[in-house]
Image (cartoon, rainbow, N blue to C red; front, side, top):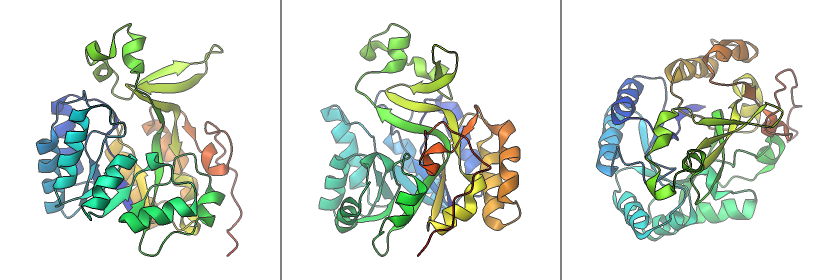
Length: 303
């Protein structure tokens, strides 16, 4: 099983972003996703910057993947997507179906991202026919559904295993709305929230996290304690989503899990002080996403 560092979902300063990835060159991850997937207005790093980082990771012996934007809203967004597709040196993660079409037309192998919402065998088979060599199931997909999915031969399965869950995207910018600003004059206020802006319910319970046009879970998905179940479900890669602090230590803990030097039962206690919020694992169990039941173990999968 391999370890992947997912695309950066938040808007950090150029200096912080470059420092993060400079450090990540030596982290114990096998795959690194690079690029802006949330908002085209976040342009402190341009495509040439992401490609330069991809070259560095490739030189460091890691697989670099260029991640495409999830919501294409303008001709300039489409132009940027075409440039990503045109650079054939790196694998591309397609995060919307327009990207799938362009990649298929270019006969460019790709990763089918989680926002393609591949919930059934027909969709997965179609993606494989179009050139997908890896797929990332939707973050809401429970273990039993994933385990029963007939994955086409030669296609890897990568699972979102740690981080705030990316739940939805909208043409509206929720961070701008929070500050009573228009989307086109957002003043890039999301840069003030390096792990997103948490929203609470009327009862005072953290419920969601807003990140520009993206809605996330307030809690942090963690499946580290379910390594045996992940293996039984034939997961090939585990994705760690970057956060503002402790990402390196989290990656190191997951590597210890994969290497067998850390027991899955000990993972929650090790991860707890490194998390920006409380953990959850509900979707994996087929329950409400914000549920946290580390003591519950799913039965072995029957062939």
